[in-house]
Length: 168
Image (cartoon, rainbow, N blue to C red; front, side, top):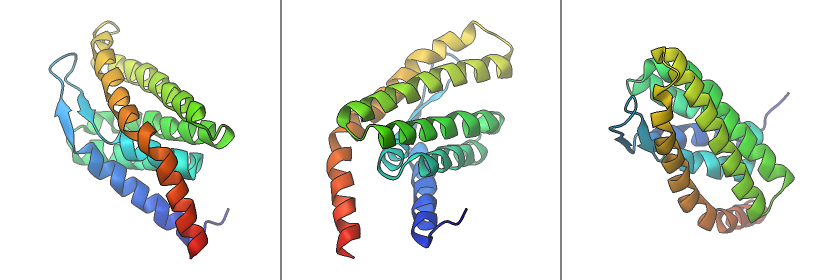
């Protein structure tokens, strides 16, 4: 499958923005000390605006690279799969239901993937199936904060970007 130069550039920008935004974080004092970060903001924006393929790449590579570079190396394979699936799912739902309701459903689906995926990953990494329950509130907070930032701006941003492309 051939990719346009525009799609390659947008994908690269998406990966870079997710990577950088994930460094804007607070470490949680509960569970195994996960993070609350802003990486989900550009992830959700790119997935909703540009679709499942760019969403998957932004999530998998952007946050996977963060784990490798940010000292969370054991988490990188799980993050690559989980956040890649989150980006793909958000993009897929937004492509099929390009409304605010669709965007909300997409983010709710991403939240479910995050909670289930990281629960299993944490249980496997630490060998404890009870401890990961303590990470669920942080995951909910992380997605909730991203939703509060993304949902009010995504519609206008999507319209503005389409207008810019047609003006070229």
